[in-house]
Image (cartoon, rainbow, N blue to C red; front, side):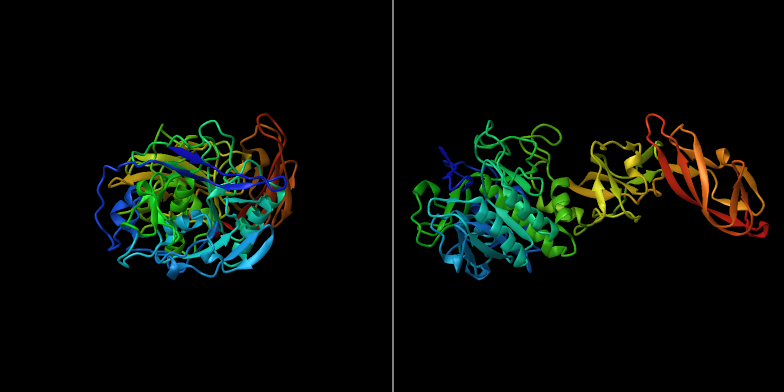
Length: 517
């Protein structure tokens, strides 16, 4: 058994393929044939992540995945799904890299993602109708530079890809690579990167260690961690990475121990976080194809939120959120619906006062999460674009802080429906206020002390001033002068645990006949 992580320095930085070649393992499960590809029964990984179950919904049509690697092909299972590639070696841009893979690594990765299915040969890719844009940056030894990687990421983004697969990595990261990853994020491109094969004591691998990537580690057929897996809080998700059967160049001589999908055919088993990364990229392509309006952050969120928890309970440094599950993702997106009952939320929308999430009418929740949102909305199966998960807010009770002022909260749950995880999100709370009025409507000529009209989470002394409208303040008493809308600016002096708070509020001033009981 051996682990290969080749890295030759060029200048001051280097990257390397994250490949490990392992001896044969036997998967104890059986696979019901979903295609006529002769090697499909060797693809234990497709069963492990429930891919074939979602092919009735999505096969990746309309999505292009950039594989930045050693090139891709030629292989008859890939030809139809390869678009014209490029090579970027030492900063030199070249054409037609689809058939110049001198290593075989990029071809293997591309096949996992998008090998054709139902063509009576070879294997099936996870997204068999997706397209692959191969960008070669690795030389014949599997080495390359970060500057080439950064340029390749930008090139891929400019070509309109939705997913970038980076089954490679190095020990450090340059500013140029950081800017390239930011460019991908700004253009809604999901970057999936291998967590590395350096073993449990190895340092963080980049670009997987960057928060702008989805970092993938490997599992074996028993859902355990292979010996080459790295550890760290940067790891986001797990996917199959041992004895993965996929495409190699048609002229490759395959060792007997690694041969799969027929004698003397251009298919081989490889192992490593590189292979695991390709599984995640393939599933991402399925999601983008089925839900083209989702952005990269939403796709990332649903992949992580629906992962099957393995190892110790909860997210950990070995498996991240757990094993990616294609069926669970599409169930959560509502493609396999049953009767949908959403979690509820009880909240007055006030800083310092509890907001309570309710799960009484839904199955037992496996995970709870509060989200901070820009705008209000109804209950949903998909986390809205303007919502962000709140750190350390994984219980049914959440106390809004000053950070939540002027936002709306959602309560999210991950439940099991028929053994399949599903995401559900409550309708939003009222807008969160740090200061509020105890009443919202006053009759004309009403006089009320500011101290009785206004309340706040802080015990600091409050003051008010009129910004506009039919009202005035005399000796700390608000007087409603005529009907209309009164706009107030309320301030509470700093008092532990709160800093100085301020809020703009509105009161409706009505005549007596406008008031209903």
